[in-house]
Length: 360
Ligand code: ADP
Ligand code: MG
Image (cartoon, rainbow, N blue to C red):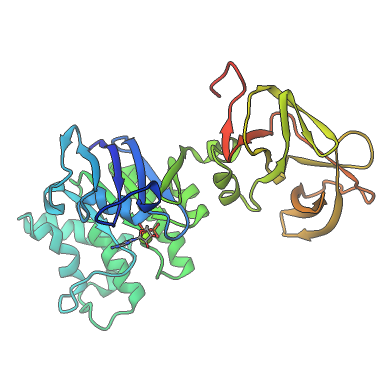
C-alpha cells in the first residue's frame, strides 16, 4: 500500500496547449492518504478517467509528477506500479474459465497453488460466482464478465492501490448494491488505498471516507460526505450533491448582512465578497412561514416522495426547493421563507467565502 502524491499535475490531450481550456485536467496538488477509501465524483467528461489513468500509468501527464510513497513513478509503466485497475467494461480472457481468470494475476506473480486456490475461492464468494468457477468466460453475460473483472481487481492483497473506474455501470441495480458492500468490506479487511470513480452521488457517498468532486477538469472539493453537504466549496458541489441540490439566491453582501431582493438576511459572520455574490441554502434548511420576516415566496406545488415532501417555491421568478419532513406542516398561506441558523453559505463567483477572521 502506498501514499500517492500528485504534484503540480495537469494534462492536456493537445500537443501544444495554450490556455487553461485546453487542459482536460487542470493543475492539481493532492496526497491520497495511504489506506483511505476515496470516491472520485463528477459528471461525464469532467476528467475522472484522465486522472485515474495518470495514477495507474496508462497515461503520462503533460505536466507534473506522480509519487508512490515519495518515489517518482510519473513515467513508470503500469506493471511497475503494483496496482489493480478495474474498468467500466469487462476485460476478461474469453477462453479461460472463471477460475483461471481470477487466478491469473496471482499465477503471474508465481504464487503457490494452494494460496491461489484459497484466494480465488474467497473472491468467487464475494462476487457470487462460486457456482460458475469452471465455466468458460465466453458465453457469460456482460454482467457476469464484469464481476470477473472486479474479482480480478480484488484478488491480490499486496497491491499499492485499487483503482475502479465506474465498475458497476453494466451491473444490474440489485447486484450493484451487493458488490459495493463487498468492496467496502474488502477495504475494511485489507485497508488498501482505494479510488472509486463514479458519476453517482449515492454511490460516492456510501462508499467513501473522502469524496473528491471534479467539475470541468478541476478538483473543486475534497471532503467527507458531511462536509460536502454542509459546506460546499463551490456552487457545483452544492448543486451536484443533495436531492434536490442547494438553492442559490443572488445577494448583495455587506458585512454580516445580505440583501436578497428587498429582504435582509442576517449572516453568521462578517464577509467580504466581490463579483457575482450568492447565498447557498440547502432545501433541508428552508423554513416556510406566513407573514413576518423573510424572503417573499409562493408555493408552486408539493411533491410527496415518501419520507419527506419537496416543496417547489417561486422566489422572484426562480424555482427554489424546500424539504419538509414527514409531519412538518406546510402553512396553506405560505408567503415567506427564512433560513435555519448556521445553514447559509456565501459564494463569490461560485466559490465559497469564509467569514472574516475564520477559515471554517
Ligand atoms: P470522465 O472520465 O470524467 O468522463 P475523461 O477523463 O474521460 O472524463 O475526459 C475528460 C475530457 O478529456 C473530455 O473532454 C474528453 O472528451 C477528453 N478526452 C478523454 N480522452 C481523450 C483522448 N484520448 N484524446 C482526446 N481527448 C480526450
Ligand atoms: Mg470516465
